[in-house]
Image: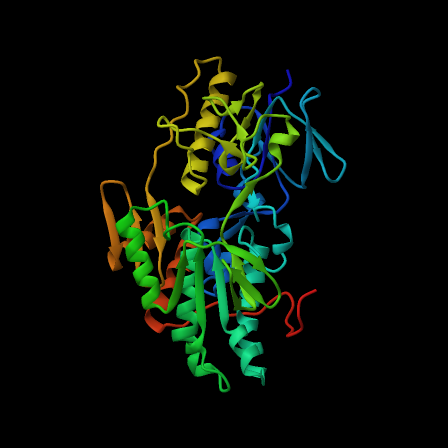
Length: 421
């Protein structure tokens, strides 16, 4: 008899957790991803802001499963699914057969109908995004150092982060610290402490998913770092010269997008109903409504909690969904009763503000300040993969904490002052 064929698309938190949970299932598992590494996205902003190196938050997928003979890894991009023939079609032209399919393909940036902004205001989802942003941030200071025009220099030293969720808050705080505390002794023609970091949020407050008191604390902590927090007005235009907030133009050469996401086209592949963000609407067991042999999890799925609110698109939610789907599949393969419908357990919201402050919202328990920062750090180190990564990140953070120096201030990929094509 041929073994049951399980295909998992996506090597993020949901996909990896699904494969982990299927260990010992006696099925043949194929994991497909268009990149060869699993990425710890919650710390991606630290690569972009020169705190960590890429190798400290990413691991080769093949390395993770080198001892799992039941797992085959394929480096390719999915372009479609033939649900009738049960085939996953790849960009290379190959077609991978499946009996059970798990789609954990994540999300990409959403520019709310202004896709032309992407080139001017890159987001942060991949290692390539992180190194691109790091290069742009560092080159802004280098160009300002060489600029002979005050207006150009000022525009180069203006940084705008659009979107005040955890990523936006963390980016803004770290860039401000970089300009205020790390770079001043290293430049001769500019005063990096004159850098203006703007955090722009169309909604009424930063960190909207947190309680109002923690949101207010985060705003205050950012302002103490020199960040200008603008709420209540959206960005209405982005050009090479700057941004327009409401009706006010601000000259700015570096713009970072942290405002919205759009699900991958998985719903289109399987011709399933999707919500406004493109997330596939799934049943109580996270399977596609029209096909019980296809599961959709993570940022790709629209999952409701008992109170009707959507499950947030964060790493713990994707991991819980991956574990749950593995249990459902294992039960089917063993001809055992299916587990109860998926229920999300919220483990809390965490965000850091610079290197000595953070906010944590566990519901009844709320923390802020230095203690929250240490808990935030320990939690992230715990969820990293492997002892080497935990030690490397812990050492980098300790070095930064004691010395005040960032450890990954390298301009890579295009080491040039020319504008990027």
